[in-house]
Amino acid sequence: MLNVGERSDPNVEVHKFYGGAVLTVCLLALVFQAFLHKYGRWSELIDLPLLVTIYFGVSRRNPVTGLFLGGTIGILQDALSHDNPIGMYGIAKTMVGYLASSVGGRVDTEHPLSRFGLVFFLFHFHQIVLAITQRVLLNHTAPLFTLRLFLDSLVTAAFAVPLFALLDRLRRGS
Amino acid sequence: MIDTYSRHRPLALLAIVVVAQVLLLAFQVKGEHDVRMIRYWAVALVTPLERAGTWSFSKVGGAWGGYVGLRNARAENERMRVELDQLRLRNRELESQAAQAQRLSTVLNFRNAHAEASMLAAQVIGSSADPTSHTLFINRGEHDRLRMNMGVVTPDGIVGKIVEVLPDAAQVLLINDKDSGVGALFSATRTHGVVRGSGDPEPRMEYVVNDEKVQPGDAIVTSGEDRIFPKDFPIGTVESCKPGSPFQVIRVQPSARLDRLEEVLVLLSQQEVAFKKPEAPATAAAASAAPAPSGAPAKTAAANPSAAPQ
Image (cartoon, rainbow over all chains, first blue to last red):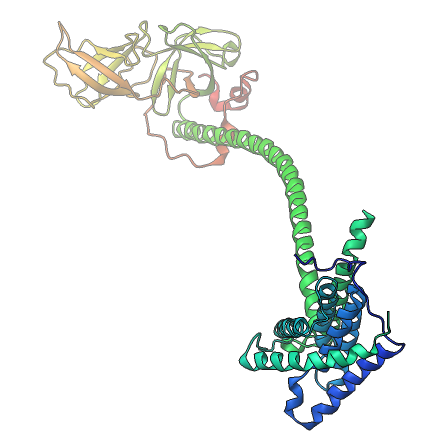
């Protein structure tokens, strides 16, 4: 059984990246997300900051690093949006980063199928946390699960597989 | 311990970061009535504590106030109880004085109505210790010029006669004593007889033949033949009568309340007195004519010329 929150197994490989790679990728993800948003609703299908959070959380396999990275990305995402209160995406991505890094230390996250499944699962987890936050704090009737969300999760997971393979190139060799 | 801390450190950090962001979010978001969520939560968090504190202070204060109030109430209750007892006692004294004034007023009115008669007011100060003897003591004696066989009356009727005179007191033989006898007659028929004590509370009228028509309620008055009481003073009324041998057996209800005597009048002479019913008592001047209390006899008689024996 997965024991969430425990330190990753010392025997599990921890991937390291070139200097500034993490920061650059995160910033690019945020910029692209904001940039693509101008070109139609199709961009809403893919949450690039979420994918980056999952990827680096899984790769670093350190829950503390994962939660801070997710929190930072989420808060920046909130800051770049015009109407989101600061912290809405921050909470969701903090928890996703924590969960992703915790899972990354326990299961194989290198295989495309496992990446697909992990992204699919974390996409819905992210959506549930987001919906709960909106319902409780903002008094919005955000949906927990819809067919649209299901399709989004499939598209995002499918997009994540080649994206993660691309990001693997930023790793330093062991 | 350290291992436990290091194991849960990421989880604790997660909680801290999430809570910090929730607070950050609450600081920005406004809820109902345009109130920031952070303020709303702060109030919601603090209000129960304040309410609990207020409730506690209120209860403690109330309990303390109740305790102090109870102590004060108890002391006040004791004080008021003492005061009530004193007031009750005072009330009884006043009631007694009022009743005495009423009685004295009656005596005074009677005395004034018979100004031609020589009378001396006296106060009953005791009675006989012998239950079979119907006598009493009054606070007038030899110093007040009282003599043996002087009649004693009340505004209601005759009481008895003086049978023993002491310097400052006298003993009165009541008309219901078995040694007592008073010349009497029926007020309506003028039939003579003698009212004699029987040892019972009610005396009897003797020497009335069976042929004499007597009915309960008939008035009996003094005949004056005994040279003690003036003629036509009320003695009582017939309570019951039945034929006897050789005379009727007639029980008399005395007009005077022989069992409740407190003030009486002593007839200083056997002068004829036209008996008049006493007027309704009213004046407070009765107190001035009150009989001297025991221990201070004869002063009234000495000061009142009309009370002197004739």
